[in-house]
Amino acid sequence: MNKGKSFTHLSEEERIKIEVLLIQGLSLSAIARMLNRPVCTISREVKRNGPQLYRAVRAHYFTGLRHRQKRKHSVFDHEMRSFIELQLRLKRWSPELISVRGKKRRSDFISTEWIYQWIWAMKFSMCESDKKYQKLYKYLRHSSRRRRRGRKRNRRGNIIDRKWIEQRPKLANLRKRHGDLEADIILGKDRQPGLLVALDRRSRKTWLRKLKIKSTDYVMKKLADVCSEIGNVKTVTLDNDQSFAEHYRLNKTGISTFFTHPYSSQEKGSVENRIGIIRMFFPKKTDFRQVNEQQVRKVQNIINERPLRMFKYKCPNEIHIS
Image (cartoon, rainbow, N blue to C red; front, side, top):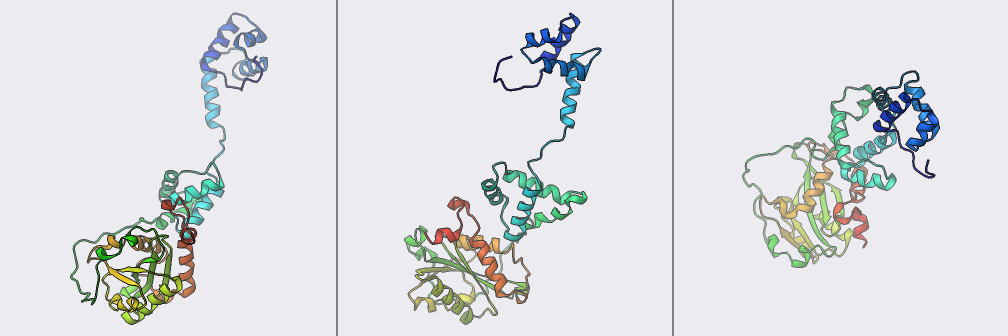
């Protein structure tokens, strides 16, 4: 036998040769030399699948059966399941983010598609051991999306001195600098005020502020405070909600304000995308009277530590300081 040759299992062709050579009366050592195999390999094969009457077809079948029944090492172990569950429940990470981050921990971490398939398999599993994972699908971002049809009548009223988004400076559109914001409001149960959301277009870093009322005076004061905290804010893009009617207050501090067109939420798509993430923590019909400031700041921190594919999986906090 050649030194250093890696071990391989006997093939069906080799087993047929063993059967023929045994019938011819050759010894096990002679058969081993002819097949270039160790004598112990031939001896084990004959004893396991004979020894009185060795048949190649039967030997090959039972060898395959033993391998299939042998207990296999599972890559998708308890540690991996627990990691996926933790990221879904606490951070609301997508399967893609979980897979990317998991591969930094373990080279054999499962793929995005595998995570999706496992989550949906758990939803319909009847096994007692899978019960703790049955509700994981609810933490997926698009687990139960509803679509509304038709248009509603515009009851927003008029906003004076409004400048449309096409008047926004080209530099703000390029996302090459910090200080160009998008802002919006999240409503809670019974359309009561919930959160003010402000986002930096360059880094996607997000600031959340809890709202007690929805009056324009109160909301604009909150937004001005956020801008003051961020510092060096140049532009803010808003929608046509009446809460932003006194946008000119920001103009007095040197910040230019611009408005999207009615029914064109895609014109401030970055903040709309962040709101979709925030809704994973505060679903529609959330009663924000039961939500405290500490909970809001915790969600803000989780979102700003969430890796983004567009930044090669760096998070907004890392991009904002660069």
